[in-house]
Image 1 (cartoon, rainbow, N blue to C red):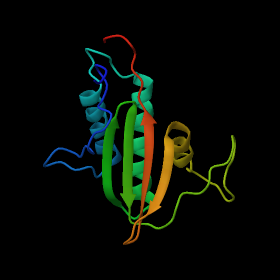
Image 2: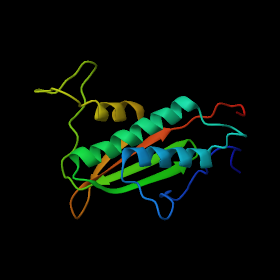
Image 3: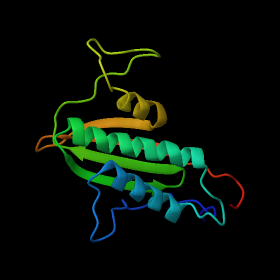
Image 4: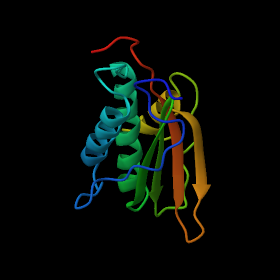
Length: 152
């Protein structure tokens, strides 16, 4: 028996509604919000807003990085599970993000930007990068979503 207000322990990936697609960071954020709204019922046990904000930031950065550095967005999936959301973003590039250093770390030759990937690594769990057989890669992460413990 599942606890009221939480997404099921196992769920199929949630794709954008028919007729829409995720092609921008804004569309990915809107889709992520819809997934949370469907999985964590505001009237029973709402999701903690700070966790939803973390999810929206992670989704936005992963999609922006695929568009900016990965040759485009090849796929986007979100899978709600009991304690959070699994996100998978596919792109066309074989290049993997640079390793993340400690606080204040900046890569050699750093001029602007470069904060998106460290943000993803800091906010997400189970970060994995997998090469795709036909080229490109999939970056998958898990973002925990806690509940407030009280109805909204």
